[in-house]
Image (cartoon, rainbow, N blue to C red; front, side):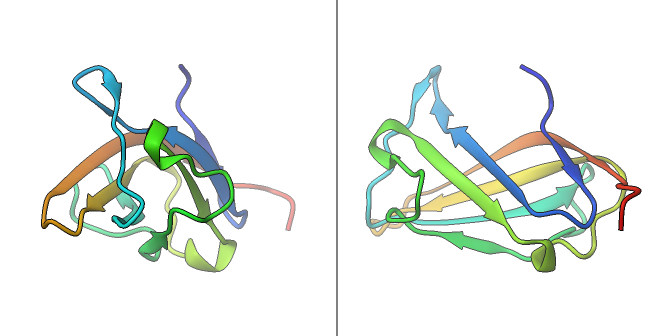
Length: 111
């Protein structure tokens, strides 16, 4: 699988299958999911923190499928190079789990 690429100035939509122990992680529909683009050293946000709800288009949480959708206005601090997407699932019962995935940020030349 190739590393997803974000072009500066664009929005970004990515479908992710959340895995745990090699199988798709079934996410309860009442969970809260937040996501952000961060630097590889885990010290800086490069995007706003977005909140995803189970009813958003493209989600199938019982199958572990989460659709991330960042608007260009939510990613004004992107820096070209390698980065990560951080996604956190918090369940009503208080359980919390965080996943990280690599991404590549490239500069676009067309304004």
